[in-house]
Image (cartoon, rainbow, N blue to C red):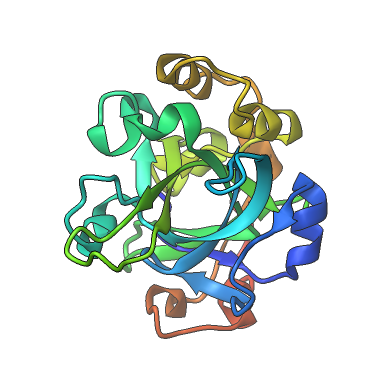
Length: 241
């Protein structure tokens, strides 16, 4: 799974990386301990509601997907991750597979490894690039109890069975994409059906190999959502090989 991650760099390199417009909330700032239901950056490609133009943009979304049938915001506490094996079967996610695919950028994420003295958090990041791009899905949602409510963008991170050395930490990991995979996943022209998109994300094409990821122990402080700062992802032990 992925229940906590970090995004602490300026947004400009992200915009350059994905060749996208900046339509995100300008008040977002560097965060080293992002929990579910918090606002996050997502990269989407879609038709604008007003103009009908195809736009690729970095936007702000609530982390925890809200399908159209969700009755309230609390639904998003259980949809911040989506297992790739069952994407096409789950009503919460399958409607987003055709038109609402996305990328979730991060500098790294945290995962907890069970040990004799309790769970030890690890920080996992790309050894060769500042940003990781997780495959995700988004959905536009409006509060059914409030006729005046605005549309809210929400997102989920797709996960798969852990691979390589990361299996020693946790059984699941995000599906991270390489540059070609990023283009394939968010392009509206890539897939003609949800089944086709599901089949692609269920394979290995376009995915970042687990060998590119480095994992090392960090402070247990990251377990508290009240804690913030660069010290949370500082190395507190040897790299997991």
